[in-house]
Image 1 (cartoon, rainbow, N blue to C red):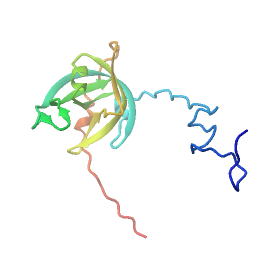
Image 2 (cartoon, helix red, strand yellow):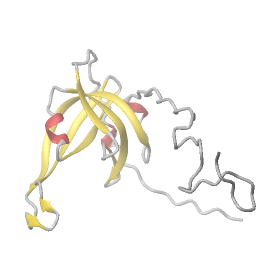
Image 3 (tube, one colour):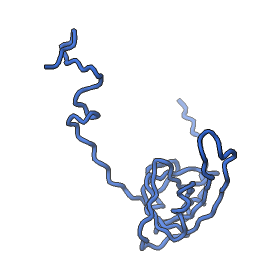
Image 4 (tube, rainbow, N blue to C red):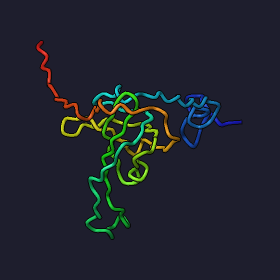
Length: 167
């Protein structure tokens, strides 16, 4: 028989926390995973994130490939920093993708990749697609679509406009 708390009449749980809650596995239902909603390149807008899309890699250009300043620092051995700009696209358009470090090998021209949890970064007023540590890049079987190369979303220049509301 469980002991009762002094004044509340509630069971005394010495370890703290709740009994039978969703976090403790006490019968709470596990939330199901959402199905990914695949978007097309022409649906991408500035400042958005969480995109899942299937694209082909058209070209890849190394932008940065440098060794760390102090390779034997207190953080252990460091890998060289590598950044490539890759032109990717689908049947609706193209956009520049910024590949970092291990992503560079996956983004070779001719590959078809699935980008999960991708986000739009703004660079000098134009859109760039990127996948950070919360996203994923998967190389998949070659896609059967023809890429629409005349609709490059990274060539569109955006300008931030501040709207002052009068009250």
